Length: 165
Image 1 (spheres, one colour):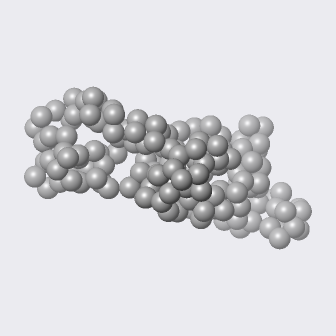
Image 2: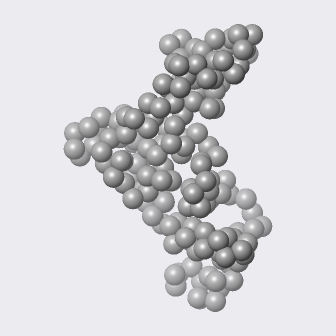
């Protein structure tokens, strides 16, 4: 980070920074709700998501009208289900704002409270988001103060490198 911010684009850090500054996630897996990243097959069939290309998630065909399918009651319900089925451990999680339980396709574990729907990547994502938290907070403050996020490099170097923060 002390050499790369502003010079190299790392999509995962960019997505995370969006969450820290209060913007919606630019990727569906970390969005509050699903349903806006549909998948189209070679024949024009449209599905709720690229992780759910199964007959029960077929919305129709591109010839049926894209906007109507994306705004259909079934697709809107599909999207809200991501938010509404979060287990308690996720609803109370300190990094929920950045993760939102990740992709429902990966939610097949049972939580310590015996609730279904815990993402199998939960522990790793939580560790990742907690690790980057101080840097994301610094970049958020820089942006709020009117400076580019890349100024974090100077802050890190002034403090003696990443190992000192």
